[in-house]
Amino acid sequence: MDLSFMDAGMGQAFARRFIFYFILCFLILWNDRDRIKIIWNAMIKKISMKRKFPIFLYLLLPLFAIILEILPGIPYVVYYYITNPERISESFKIIQNLF
Image: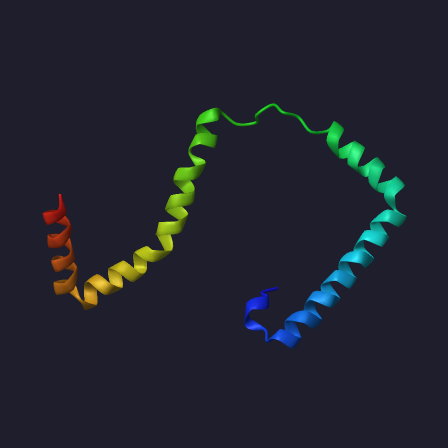
Protein backbone atom coordinates (compact mmCIF):
# COMPACT_ATOMS: atom_id res chain seq x y z
CA MET A 1 0.00 0.00 0.00
CA ASP A 2 1.36 3.39 -0.95
CA LEU A 3 1.14 5.87 1.90
CA SER A 4 2.18 8.82 -0.24
CA PHE A 5 -1.30 9.46 -1.67
CA MET A 6 -3.01 9.42 1.74
CA ASP A 7 -3.44 12.45 3.90
CA ALA A 8 -1.80 12.42 7.34
CA GLY A 9 -4.82 11.02 9.20
CA MET A 10 -5.39 8.15 6.78
CA GLY A 11 -1.68 7.33 6.69
CA GLN A 12 -1.46 7.12 10.47
CA ALA A 13 -4.60 4.99 10.69
CA PHE A 14 -3.30 2.64 8.02
CA ALA A 15 0.08 2.36 9.78
CA ARG A 16 -1.65 1.45 13.05
CA ARG A 17 -3.80 -1.20 11.38
CA PHE A 18 -0.78 -2.58 9.53
CA ILE A 19 1.17 -2.92 12.77
CA PHE A 20 -1.83 -4.65 14.37
CA TYR A 21 -2.15 -7.11 11.45
CA PHE A 22 1.58 -7.74 11.51
CA ILE A 23 1.42 -8.61 15.21
CA LEU A 24 -1.58 -10.91 14.59
CA CYS A 25 0.31 -12.74 11.81
CA PHE A 26 3.30 -13.13 14.12
CA LEU A 27 1.09 -14.58 16.87
CA ILE A 28 -0.50 -17.06 14.42
CA LEU A 29 2.93 -18.18 13.25
CA TRP A 30 4.20 -18.36 16.84
CA ASN A 31 1.26 -20.57 17.78
CA ASP A 32 2.12 -22.99 14.95
CA ARG A 33 5.90 -22.75 15.32
CA ASP A 34 6.37 -26.54 15.71
CA ARG A 35 4.59 -27.24 12.43
CA ILE A 36 6.42 -24.42 10.72
CA LYS A 37 9.77 -25.90 11.82
CA ILE A 38 8.77 -29.26 10.32
CA ILE A 39 7.72 -27.62 7.05
CA TRP A 40 10.86 -25.47 6.94
CA ASN A 41 13.14 -28.46 7.49
CA ALA A 42 11.31 -30.47 4.82
CA MET A 43 11.72 -27.62 2.33
CA ILE A 44 15.39 -27.10 3.08
CA LYS A 45 16.29 -30.78 2.66
CA LYS A 46 14.73 -30.88 -0.82
CA ILE A 47 16.73 -27.92 -2.12
CA SER A 48 19.38 -28.95 -4.58
CA MET A 49 22.15 -26.61 -5.64
CA LYS A 50 22.57 -28.45 -8.94
CA ARG A 51 21.60 -26.38 -11.97
CA LYS A 52 18.80 -27.86 -14.03
CA PHE A 53 19.65 -25.89 -17.19
CA PRO A 54 22.89 -25.12 -19.04
CA ILE A 55 24.76 -22.04 -17.85
CA PHE A 56 24.26 -20.15 -21.14
CA LEU A 57 20.49 -20.12 -20.53
CA TYR A 58 21.03 -18.42 -17.20
CA LEU A 59 23.29 -15.89 -18.89
CA LEU A 60 20.55 -15.13 -21.45
CA LEU A 61 18.09 -14.05 -18.75
CA PRO A 62 19.20 -10.38 -18.71
CA LEU A 63 18.89 -10.28 -22.51
CA PHE A 64 15.35 -11.65 -22.35
CA ALA A 65 14.48 -9.14 -19.62
CA ILE A 66 15.61 -6.28 -21.87
CA ILE A 67 13.65 -7.71 -24.80
CA LEU A 68 10.53 -8.00 -22.64
CA GLU A 69 10.93 -4.35 -21.64
CA ILE A 70 11.31 -3.15 -25.24
CA LEU A 71 8.77 -5.42 -26.93
CA PRO A 72 5.57 -3.64 -25.76
CA GLY A 73 6.91 -0.30 -27.05
CA ILE A 74 7.34 -1.48 -30.64
CA PRO A 75 3.67 -0.95 -31.65
CA TYR A 76 3.84 2.62 -30.29
CA VAL A 77 6.99 3.32 -32.30
CA VAL A 78 5.41 1.94 -35.47
CA TYR A 79 2.25 3.99 -34.89
CA TYR A 80 4.30 7.14 -34.23
CA TYR A 81 6.40 6.50 -37.34
CA ILE A 82 3.26 6.12 -39.47
CA THR A 83 1.60 9.26 -38.09
CA ASN A 84 4.76 11.47 -37.87
CA PRO A 85 7.35 10.21 -40.36
CA GLU A 86 9.08 13.60 -40.72
CA ARG A 87 9.81 13.84 -37.00
CA ILE A 88 11.21 10.29 -36.93
CA SER A 89 13.53 10.99 -39.84
CA GLU A 90 14.72 14.18 -38.07
CA SER A 91 15.43 12.11 -34.95
CA PHE A 92 17.47 9.61 -36.97
CA LYS A 93 19.49 12.47 -38.52
CA ILE A 94 20.27 13.84 -35.06
CA ILE A 95 21.39 10.39 -33.86
CA GLN A 96 23.58 9.94 -36.97
CA ASN A 97 25.25 13.31 -36.34
CA LEU A 98 26.11 12.23 -32.79
CA PHE A 99 28.13 9.30 -34.10
